[in-house]
Image 1: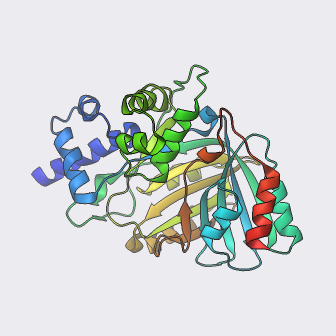
Image 2 (image 1 turned 180 degrees about the horizontal axis):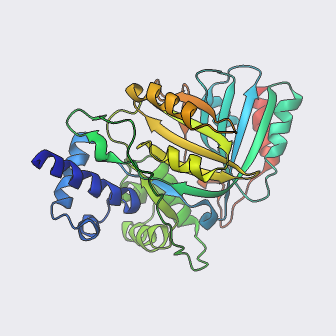
Image 3 (image 1 turned 180 degrees about the vertical axis):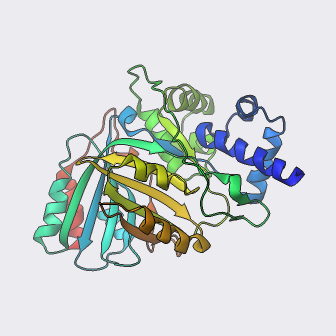
Length: 341
């Protein structure tokens, strides 16, 4: 009984860490009502090297998130693709079942002229076909660690009994417009998640007190971060699922404890993302087959090891911010020609 209680307390603390980060253990203690919250956080950092990863709110950064489902004519190195797209891609995932199929996440302005880059790759025969989606809403789900064995580092159950709810994300911005320091702090923290604020201060050449103020008052205080990903143990693969928007399907997928987001896209389409451990794969595939109704769920599987072979995650394109977002499509086309032609 004591072990179950400890597991319940740890999973509850992790719920709040995934919402608010770990910068203020006192806040987590107050919200969770668990007196040992600070000690639990310290233990998780020591045992699992816990590093909450900040998830940006694209609209509060005056950006749009796009997803592109691409069929290339050949297998292309993910790092080369990232470089060729001039740093605007925040995720590149190749399907292990079809290594010419990619799901690419792009952060860009509302003027989506990067499409010219896709069309150029079609013209030179590198892309056979692509489908572009614009994200209209992103729901972030905390990983449910209630079935996680903290001693073995494995999930003991593939599904939870009831559907989960995404985090509620109140608008704290009050028309706030982030400045260059805010954007760079968030970008640096995503780029190298083990960076402390002191590391960021040194990297940017900005006094620590100024970095701390911007992070607390703007990046966090104005809601530029929606939530945090916290990955404990070894996750072996990521999955992307694209399907016709359906609340029943959303609810069913939320029973997978490692579902991390559902994005509602243009054209009444949804995209779900989950991470999982290898022993969960068969049951998840079986579950997806069972919940499919009239519309098929298209899924791609992206092994996380070896790194950058099937999956690459990158920061917001903070290098393109200079008082405002500056994206140069001509520069993008030159990069593509130089690297991919």
